[in-house]
Image (tube, rainbow, N blue to C red; front, side, top):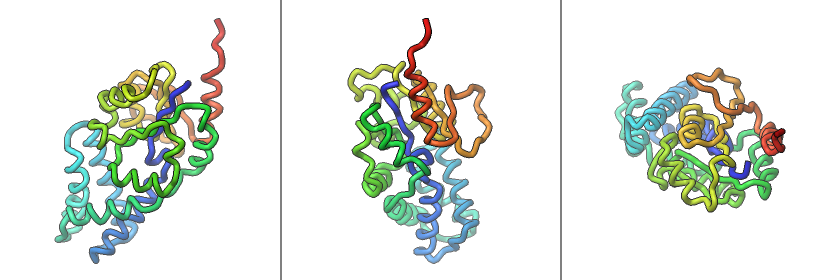
Length: 233
């Protein structure tokens, strides 16, 4: 393998921790209920809305505002979801939390492979978190769907990315990510190898299996080394 395409949230960054902190701060600033249960419910709504975006059922703008609109309706709260969205994104773009082993993995792989980032996140949020983490130099290029114009798993997202990678060869590429519906389906659509990062060992819910599966990021170098071994003839 030569080209490694990494998802960002829940693969490199611990998004759940960042999400919970940001939504609690947002609701607190608006003098709204901001406990753990509300944060968990927001997370469930947010996940379902992003999955609808992947299926092209709604737009990105509908995701970003609609998740708060749904939450406020459920809680019987009269608050402006557009205002909540702006506050939330501001908090979310500040700071970062790494998935265990992520920073060490990037250091180990840097210079041995061409690393790329492929994210469905909002551009200003991801750019702020990447600046905070200082990991942008590890990547040859960073592809954020809002800037690319298409979202994972749409093959057009990958076509745009591949067109910007000099000499790109699909057979030498692999995508590493936590999402079956976004990362693994996207890699499958694009005709590249897929590696599912599944730390909680969830069962695969797709009708097909990812090409590879790891439960800790530290397993990836060994897998890549194995894939680079000469095949018997």
